[in-house]
Structures are given as structure tokens and as C-alpha cells.
Amino acid sequence: MMEASERRVISVIVVNEASVLSRITDLFSGRGYNITSLTVAPIPDSRYSRLTIVTSGSIRVIEQITKQLHKLIPVLRVYEHADLVEKEMALVKFPVTENITDISTLCEAYNGKIVNVGENVIIVMVADEPKRVDNFLQVIKRYNPKEIVRSGAVALER
Image (tube, rainbow, N blue to C red):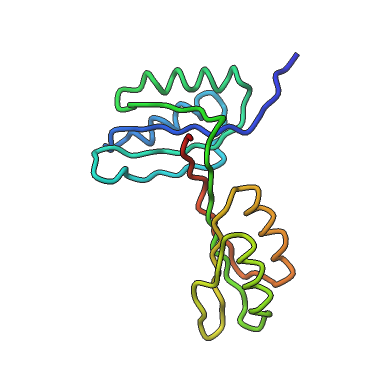
């Protein structure tokens, strides 16, 4: 019987040095697991960075990956979250000919707003839970988005 594969979020605190990211991604690819989203940023006023990794796998597989992550020298802490606050950002470019009022109203419903208006385009930003960003991107299709960029998830344990 095969175990169910579920979406998982793992936070990893690492020493901010060359090749750490490569070693972590090698651990996933070496076991045949895909990283759905990867966000990395330095932790302010420290020599560390936080990686937020979104992946899918069984509880057993995620436990195995977590144990392997702990063995990497520059890794300080690994959290596999159940109770977390998770957000993702998306920037979307629309033709200026689309209905700005409708687009603005939709953005506000998803913790977003218009961030730039140019001669030919409107750029909006939304920042919300990943599922809600998915919903927003579905809803706005009727306004002919020209380009969409997503940030990847960031998360903090409660």
C-alpha cells in the first residue's frame, strides 16, 4: 500500500555560505522529490538565512528528508510545519485597456493593490495564502493578464 503524498512546508535555518543551497536541493533531487517552491532570504542582523521549501511527499519521506537535512554541516535548524503562517506574493501585469476599477477591487479582496500604472500596463500585487493566490490568478484571467510572477511561499511557525 502506497502512502498518500501531501503538500509539506519545511523551513531550514542555515549558515549563509556558498554551496549550501546546492547541497540542500541535491538532497531532494537525489531522492527523486521535486521542490514546488523555494524561497531564500538572509535573516536580518545575523550570518544565517531561512529557506522555505514547499514539496510533496508521504510523512515517512518528509521525515527522512528532514533527518538528512539535519546532517548537513551548515544547517542549524529544520522545521516541518503543521501550525504555520504562510504567505505568497504575485505580481500581475495587465493591459491598461482593462477595467482598472474591477481589477483594483479584486486585488483588495486578496490583500493586494495596484502598484504601478504605466502608459500601456497596470501592475498589481497580491500577498496572501498560496491557495488564495491560486484563486486570484484564476479569477483575473478574464482581464487578460500579460505576465504573472509568483514569489514562492514564505512561512513562520506559530
